[in-house]
Length: 96
Image (tube, rainbow, N blue to C red; front, side):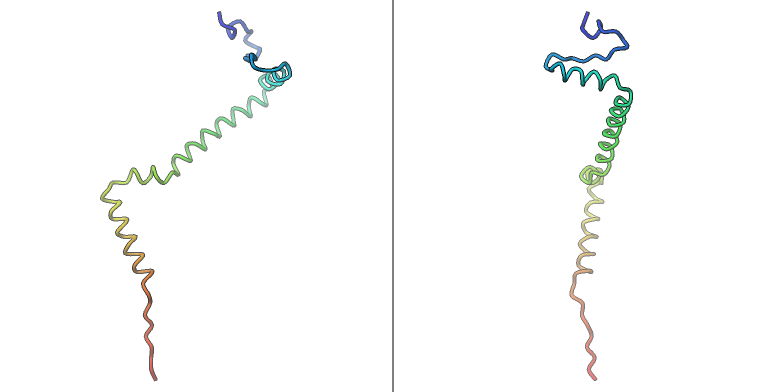
């Protein structure tokens, strides 16, 4: 029978082997407060959402999914666009 099995179901379980009495009291108060529990659940859910969004927005993983032939076409198109936009413009001088 473990220590966790020995605790009644309505009391929070806190492993306090490395904690002072004051830290234990604070941990038990935190675990037994339903508002704090709700905040912790929302925080965990938010962390999962942030991880998922970071994975979706990661450009390296997006680029890794593009087939090599398309990558070559994109690089070529970017090169042509750069040449067109960055070439010096010639202005026609009108002499009167």
